[in-house]
Length: 241
Image (cartoon, rainbow, N blue to C red):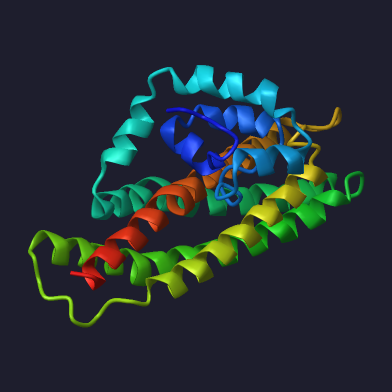
């Protein structure tokens, strides 16, 4: 892959997800902000693009089997992957984090009042993200699977398609809001740094929050930079048959 100033951040991460670490290090948003050019991203984050491009080129030149595998999936298979991998992860970790954050508030809240705001932010994240995933599982993913079926079986597409862009705009906006919520939590926790008086539960909770955010970033990347874009292309193909 040839990287230049006009290459989008999302396309670079799509080619090799290991580049996400470089973007994180330089405070460049690769999931919700993956649609902008590298030049625009560098100006926004005050990063020297002449230094960044060689770093990215070196990573992209390396093999990344995971990125190749995901990019090779049919869209219905990618929906299955996201649901089984990322939706399951979110559903399994929400109760654990809610319980641990409540415990931290009870034990350490007097000395660390920020824990109460972190707990409220995460509870909001849990509620909205759960509703968001249901929209995907009940509306978006079935729609995409239907499109794949119509294309594979060469079915008539006179009606039933054409609303995907509205759905994606809504989901993309929700991605942005949840990403911003985690940015606040990251700031409040000093990037999930356990304080000197923190106990083992404190350390485990903050590490799990960090892992949760990392998983969310990849989750959003797969949808914003791969699934949504490919789905819109497929819908356009079906509508113009």
